[in-house]
Length: 595
Ligand SMILES: [Ca+2]
Ligand SMILES: [Ca+2]
Image (cartoon, rainbow, N blue to C red):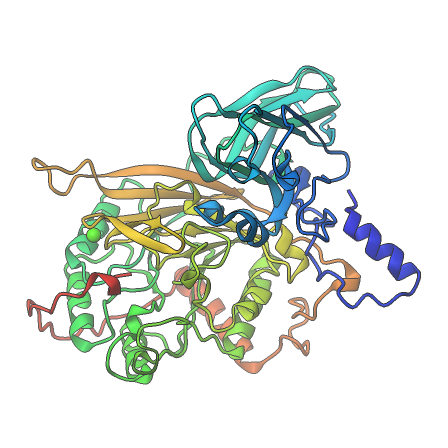
């Protein structure tokens, strides 16, 4: 479907008028869908809706809405309105509206609170999609991202689906808060049906709250996963001066019937970069090693905290990780684990404040080459970096969590060229029980960025947080320990969220390991870039191409190939565990530093 914005640009181009503010590649609807193990039949981002005033009741082509019961109130909020989070919160205030981390660019909004209806009114607003072609399908999956805050008793929201213009059937009814969630409904298609329409109905609203909807997709449903995954990767993070729970988590992971091929610790292994902290961590690690013997670590902010120099802290990380560079790749049973890491942070200079991540051009070039390599092989890359990517997981709405990279555009310009990635971020200790424990990184700078790739929060070994206020957070459990198991299949990546201390109490202070939930991510090949907008990029077919052919990159690639061939995996080799100073009490760290 061609968006209005695309049409306007096409027309003006034909007339040879210069358009100085033309939308960047990928800023609107995707022009193509990726090849996927769950093919796309439909996707609507709302981003292509022409909206010069930043608020419009115009909907995407073929969509419609019907509003009843309104004789008063602000015209801007009369029924469904297309806007984006910046303009929405500018007009209506934040008050948790901005916790909608999966909403990207424009989306559809009901704001009953801001509508300011007279008491006599009660709004029913129904928004229907265009008829979606589902001819020949037996079963489809309806998916979308949404953010819903319940108002008074009696006000409600409904999602209904009708086929071939028939009576819609309710597939979901919302009568309590459901924040920032990705919804998935499997629907049986009546025999011979050619189209389906989805209707989003907000019913009985007057001075209630809001509902926002984005990324409406119809795809083939998930099929049954294979009985056994090809490989399992354990992922924890933010162990930070909690060696007892670190050991407990590793013991629990080691005890699971399916053996993992590697352990990733995604940053903040230590509470600061001092020798004492490293000794404490290494002692715990030596006491309870991960059974795989294969590890990948990333550098968090805490590795770089302390009164010594950036260089001194970095040298300790490199020494104990066995790496010669901050970045790294480990291949486990054919699955690449790639770490992106800061190269500089001076706590003396910056006093604990963001940004933490300085990524050099050399590292970015290496990353691009590695992702291009795996993309060409049709292999999903698992990418690990400690800080959050904006517009993804819980807490990525927060001002400070949006400023962890010195150059967020540079890292996004590389990462968002690829769709067959699952990324993992940590840092916030944000609870895995939240709906947005994973989100999709969408980005306007690349043609692939509109479809994006999934990003999963890794939880934390130390403390569990929930969002609080505009961009703050609060500890909700100071005894928690959570993490992930990642299962790699031919057609998908399955990520399981685990509570290592579920159900603990006086009788059983450590509780038990229990899976909180899991999510499957289908393989999706990279969206082919439209020729006119194709950015310069390394061509994996030609090793000597000018964009990608540095000798460093070649050597690294060759080394990885050799090591992968030798052992199926190579990793952090940290045999040089120091003499343990052990048992020396360290001063308690103020809570505001424990993040
Ligand atoms: Ca959108
Ligand atoms: Ca803990």
